[in-house]
Amino acid sequence: MMNFLWKRKGVTLLELIVAISILTILVAGIVPLTRMTAKRTREIELRSNLRIIRTALDDFKKSYDKAVNDKKIPVTENKSGYPETLNQLVEGYDFGGLYAFKKKFLRKVPIDPMNPPEPGEEPEWGMRSYSDQPDSNSWGGEDVYDVYSLSEGTGLDGTKYEEW
Image (tube, rainbow, N blue to C red; front, side):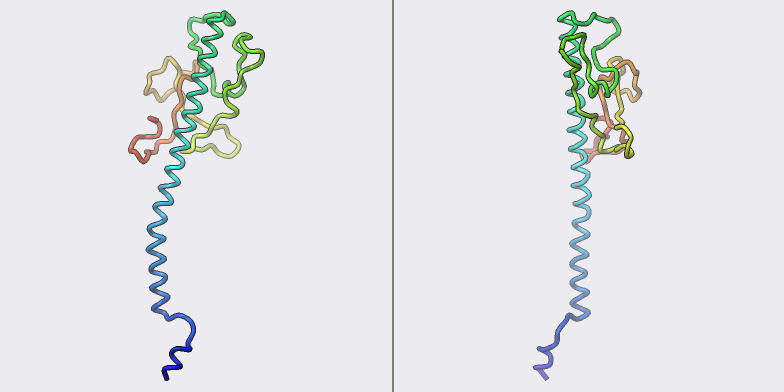
């Protein structure tokens, strides 16, 4: 009789239920961590993309100021020196002949990972002009002084993405 018990193959229903229960507990712990990691990754990308655009805006302004100082372009009273659109950073600007070519500051406008565009559409960012208030959510349209995310979500640190 003992030989018969040792020769059986397979698992019992109880062993199967225990194994499935353990796997369920492990998956229940891993799924929230995976979601948190994905959100954190998008937040890192958002911070990076904001830094890239803001650096390009500042570099454009420096080139504009240099062109004014070198008398390549005339001083205009209502012109801040920032680009008129984000696409101007991609298309380039010649600054009145300061450079022998149109100087480009971005290869393409980065996307907002918290508010991604539909396929085939241009990336959308909230924009502020030089004359807008620092916390303004409406763009004056004269130039692009700053950008922010259009997402209404809140980051892992508790701040809204549009405030970054």
